[in-house]
Length: 353
Image (tube, rainbow, N blue to C red; front, side, top):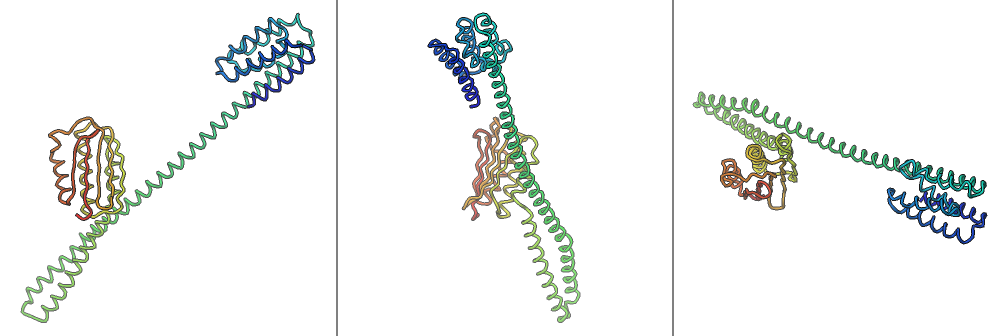
């Protein structure tokens, strides 16, 4: 847009100069030729610039009246890559020194210098805007990357906190089971021994029975609480992610959409993924794998697939696959293994298993 404004200013100056010189109708030919060539120079790619400027420079050398619109051509010459093309407008002026009046030559030289200044100013302004837009794009891209990194960092932090919480919960359950459970078991054995020793003393035996019943109830409650605490310490998404991140032979992309699942389903999916990743490492030439754990309204689904080109040996009836099948079928599920753009495991377990 700025180039059009610059050329419009130069065109007005050239028209005023042609009116002052009383060039006549022949100047119209020069005007139309200059406007047509400068329009082509603005429209065509930059490498076609010489094809638009050189013909007009030659016409200026042959027909002096074409010099009246030389500033338009000079504006286009300034934008060329090679130095001799940028200075090409000096040739017609040098040729016309003996054929035109000194005042006209001086005026044309001034207009051409103005065209050079306008062209350089517009080019510098365009370069500034280009760098500004580039800086703006880079800043926006950096902000997006920083936001994504912050999001990933927060997710990783939440994951590590969740993992530490589950590990601590599992440790507490283990400590209760090993310490308190052991003490209660020993107390039950001691009460049982006292019952044998004082079996003939009925009042004391009844009291020992009550103590034994209380200890047995406490033992059952602790055992139930420990089992519940241990089950809660097993988060399916965290465990699957830990297995995926511990894999070093190829990247594993995990997608877990199961918020909560029964204990049996959790351990089944964890064991199957562990065995599947082991099989990929030993038997596949895969460069990547995907794992999807999905919860549907009526079933839980696990899909594991790699991009390897080796088809399964033994018809897909290895011991590892058979163990996976047994685990799934024990829960009333369906296990399918086959080759489809890589080796693929498809497991579905109904919720009412």
